[in-house]
Length: 231
Image 1 (cartoon, rainbow, N blue to C red):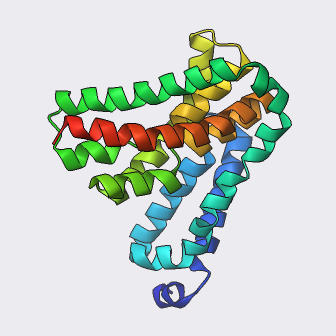
Image 2: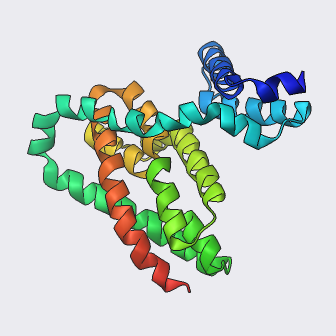
C-alpha cells in the first residue's frame, strides 16, 4: 500500500482534499471554532503520513499542484475589494493607518519576544513574517536568513488561530465596525483569517483582502529594518 501512494501522482492532492473535506464536515456538524477545516486537515495529513510511514517529500511532490494555486488564489481576493471600492475611497486614511498599526504591532511583538527568550538572529527573522501570506512570507524568511520551513508552519498556525478566535476577540473588545474588523483580521492572520472575515460579511472580507496585500508589502520593508535589531 505504501508503494502505491509513493508512486501515485495524485496522492498528495487526494489526501489534502479528503482531509480538508473531513474538516469541513466536522465544522458544519459541531460548529465549534476548534474544528477549523485547515487545522483538521493538517492533523489528519500528519497522522496519516506518520502511521503509513510515508516520507513527507512524497506527499509534497504530489501536493505541489495545490501549492502552485496558492498565489493566484490570494490574488483572487481582490474581487471583493473591487466590489467595495467606493467604501475604501471614503475611508482610505483610516484603512491605511489601521494596516500600518497592525504591521508595526506584529513586528514589535516579535522583537519583544526575541529579547525575552534570547533568540538568535535566524530564529528571530524566521518569526517576523508570521502575519503575512505564505507566498510572501517564505521569500522574506529566506532573504533574511531564517528557517523557511518553520516560517511556513508559524504562518499557518497564525492564520488558523486568527480564523478560530477573531470573532470572539472582536466581541470581547467590542469592535463592531466592519471595516475595523476586516483590517484587524487581514493584517494579523492573512488569507486564512480572511476566510473568516468573508463569513462575517462582504465589507469585512473586502477590507481583510486589502490588508493582506498592503501588510505584505509593509512587512517586506519593515522586516528588513527590524532584522537589524538582532544580529
